[in-house]
Amino acid sequence: MTPKRVAILISGGGSNMLALLDSMTGDHPARPCLVLSNDPAAGGLARAAARGVPTAVVDHRPFKGDRAAFEAELMTPLLAARTEIVCLAGFMRVLTAGFVAQWQGRMLNIHPSLLPKYRGLDTHARALAAGEAEHGCTVHEVTAALDDGPILGQARVRIRPGDTPQTLAARVLEQEHRLYPAVLRRFAAGDRTPLRLDPGT
Image 1 (tube, rainbow, N blue to C red):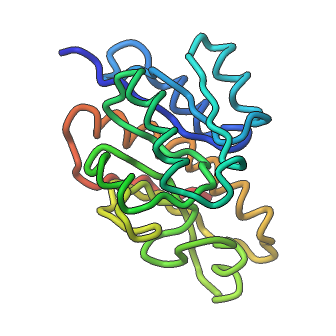
Image 2 (image 1 turned 180 degrees about the vertical axis):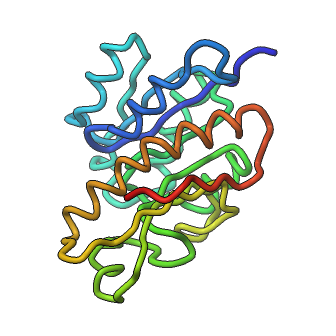
Image 3 (image 1 turned 90 degrees about the vertical axis):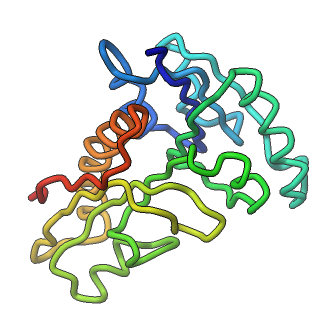
């Protein structure tokens, strides 16, 4: 079977992107075809290029809030790369329903909470403020609603006494780097059964 072509969208250093890139080798049912960013200064672009992965930039700033025009430009490199699966990995732009619809069932995102809890930002601080016993991350299919869509996998982290948002975020990120590649491998092979990883300490 021909490997699926995966484009990864980033806005920063791309640690989850690297975890995905490094996993797509050997018998993996997917291969990276593009790393695309909305920020020309995103550190992940150079890291992807160093691994031999094509990169592209569509700077959102000249579009001055015209999200439809920005997304139309995003489509150009995605289509040129013959993208089959899109992975959002720290892509800090909210996508319109029209863009999402074009990739329905083919676009994944990772979010640093156990969805449906704590959609949006500041998830670690919010979990601590709520007195949660555990926290974690979720990979889900992207739909028009923010941090919604069918859940494809979750990894849990126990909250420790004395945790800060920073210490908790660091442990969750370790689990993100385990979870996202594992889910992508299954997803690219046609398996959408939700994956549950053992709790992290």
